[in-house]
Amino acid sequence: MHTSGSANSNVPLLEGALRNPANPNHLMVIRPIKRTVRVYVGDALVAETKNALRVMEMGKSLYDPAIYIPATDILVTLKPLNKTSHCPLKGDASYVALNDDEIAWSYDKPLDVSRQLAGHFAFWPDKVRITEGD
Image 1: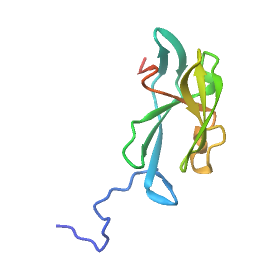
Image 2 (image 1 turned 30 degrees about the horizontal axis):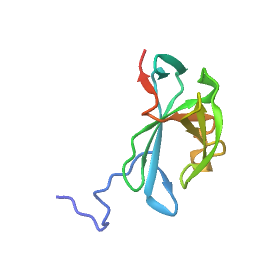
Image 3 (image 1 turned 180 degrees about the vertical axis):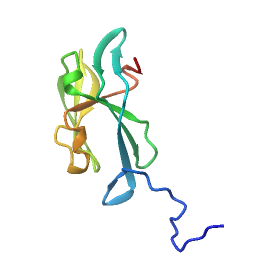
Image 4 (image 1 turned 135 degrees about the vertical axis):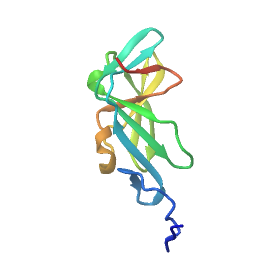
């Protein structure tokens, strides 16, 4: 049996985890998706990319993974909404709509730790259908 003086010795380190300095239990991992990702609203294709990012985040609970799509791979015009929110790991989010329905969010000026999310949008999973693979 392995023992250690550290109370956290059984907690695995998440490789590449980005942590909130004010709360180390709030963390996220960002990974590239190595397959084609498509986003649909109904049957309409609204985004297609080979450069998506998967964000897995744990804060007050384990959140569902979010897929972030580069803005350059979005095929429709998204209308900015007058709505913002703040995440201590990512920064200030702004929200967008398609056909007057809030559909996605982005971090236009993310915090330095999550700068790779700049220029990407994440879609509300209950408003779209996301597929992975060719």
